[in-house]
Image (cartoon, rainbow, N blue to C red; front, side, top):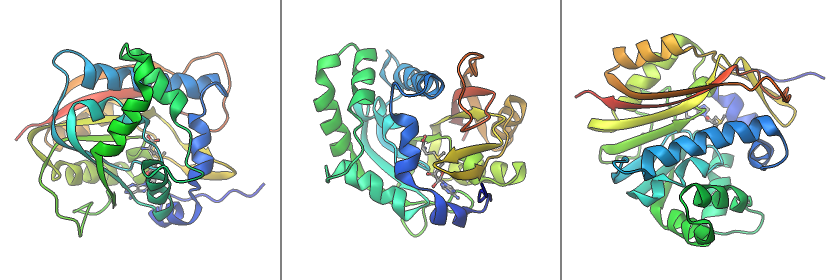
Length: 263
Ligand SMILES: C[S@@+](CC[C@H](N)C(=O)[O-])C[C@H]1O[C@@H](n2cnc3c(N)ncnc32)[C@H](O)[C@@H]1O
């Protein structure tokens, strides 16, 4: 089969099919993707919902794609969330869920899992409503641009989340460092960046389309964050489990980190 492959963002606009990507989030279908999602949800929960967790007024999610799992814990401790993505189709898919439109993805198994982590399994419909209320806008975003949200003008955020986006969007390590610098401009001094993704990923599949990824290593990430004005406060990692198979991507591990803008 001939795969289309590129790292330039327009490939996303043309080829990234949100409904195919959402297959990764159907719990119970593949133990490896379940494990990845559980890893992320557990750490979002610990970061936003535990005693002393992050809280504030504005949180911006960078490169949201068509997904909301990354916002389920944060929506309890931030007053406003702005979701963003590069592609029109992803932003529409998000709006579909936010506005309860027909054909929207069913996130309820994931929402129930998060409510269970929070000790409130019965409250999942309330959490969905809370998230819908808290996400105020879905904006266009390009992290390769110096001002990723232009032309929108927003107050500096208290917190940024970005999951599985840097390695998808950045064609080189230099571009990745630049993207971190661009993200920093969206954050208030001492604000938090919550970053997660896969280590050493070279590709991932979305349906039958193959997307190149930038292989990220721990050493690079920590140095790049340091150089671009962040202090790392927490780094959680896990290896890709040896058992089970998923040939849709070749990541070797997962990371979840919290960094703070220095000034
Ligand atoms: C692997 S998906 C991750 C989606 C979601 N954050 C998640 O955790 O599942 C990568 C996302 O990066 C977005 N993307 C690609 N190039 C981008 C760019 N230059 N700026 C911002 N986002 C970009 C894609 O549209 C896609 O939604």
